[in-house]
Length: 342
View 1 (spheres, one colour):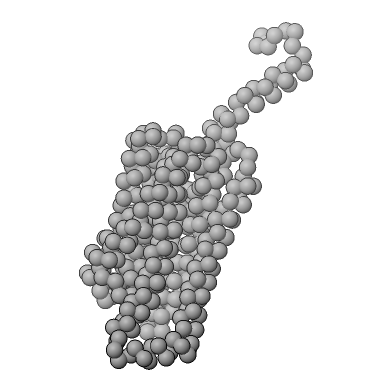
View 2 (cartoon, helix red, strand yellow; view 1 turned 90 degrees about the vertical axis):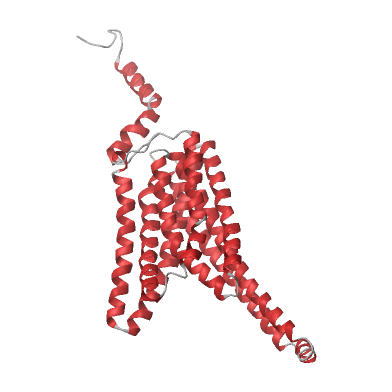
């Protein structure tokens, strides 16, 4: 017994199938195709969940600098070096893992526009490269200006004339130079925190699991990053209170980035996909172009001391990378089995 009307011909049947295909395109792309590819498709969380849980993680990330300042006196000697080495490797594994297992797969869905999202990911890598070069250019320009001032005859004569009666001016000028370096570090932190917040906001709009995964990756990267920045600021002449205050001010941009990421994600799923692609490119650049060279430099320094120190450093770095990658993979692959209240 046929389920089709008796007066239907082959052309009518073909048109009906085409109509069903076009009507159910979203169903196929959102359920069948992701299921076939093994990807997790989670329902979007409620708005209050996105804001409450997301802002909670942003607050933890923002106060990581205070934690770093509090722990810095306790982390001394070999224990400090080993902890920092492990967390540097953990930062590489978690950032690259979050980009490969979460951000980029979340951007490249079954809909059209994957090619443009690929360009967005590449743009994220190149954008951070340009920012790095711009900061390097600024530092070099400042150094050359200071060098010209030092050899300028008028400046040299003025410095000689005031040497005996205004010795405190030398300390003041030195303090200004230190402040310039400190401000550049704080500016870089502010930009970095804004991008982190943007990524986390866009991820939390897609799913709580994705947002939590990206937040964990950022926390793993921020701990050694903030410890290093705090050490630089303290060596630059800042007090612990000043370092804490300026780090908190730069952390406010993480909140701004989160708000923008959530608003863009709510505006359009496509906008959220482009933000995830951009963040994926940025995370890959930070992990591969910034942290891995730091790992290589650290390994070279330790292996010059002794072979055992070099082997220990390599093992700690590798352990951190593997832990970060495995954690990100587990959260991505077995995410549907992880209970997240929605």
